[in-house]
Amino acid sequence: MACSSDIKEQLGLVQVYTGDGKGKTTASLGLGFRAAGCGLNVLMLQFLKPAAGCGEQLAVGHFDNFTFLPLGLDHMNGHRVDRATDLKVAAETFAKAKELIYSGKYDLVILDEINVAMDWELLDPAAVISMLQGRPEHIEVVLTGRHAPAAVIDYADLVTEMKMIKHPFAKGVGARRGIEY
Image (tube, rainbow, N blue to C red):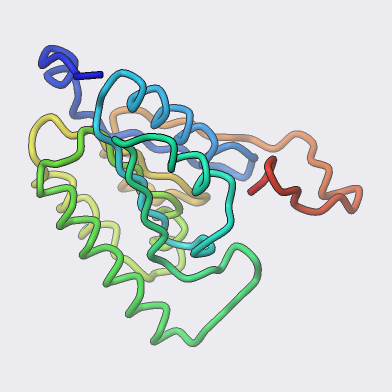
């Protein structure tokens, strides 16, 4: 499905999904699937998720116009490395994100878990904001992850905080394939 130019002309906002509740990545994926279904070109670049096996990685394969790049390190499953490696990979992932955003190839770009990378001081929020300010005019960008920096929240056009009220983890129910990943 081709996207009409008037749809693209309405794009260009920065959205932030943050908070301690479940659903930040899921909400961004829902937005991505909606955009892809309307013919927009979508990129989801993950900063801190596993390189293979998540349900979202399998689902986006059904779309020709949804590119998925898990470039960060797998910190979501408790895998930790040394800080120098974290900094190096975060910088490389951010550089790739900037390159792809500036390419103009994508209409919607989701930077999954970038807020956590900034919170862990792997990325400078000022550099992220500068990159967003310099992007092509009609590219919508979504930043996900807990602890979005105040400067990013101030800069964004839309901010949603997911608040946890209750979660099955408290009862010892672990992450379930197809639901949490």
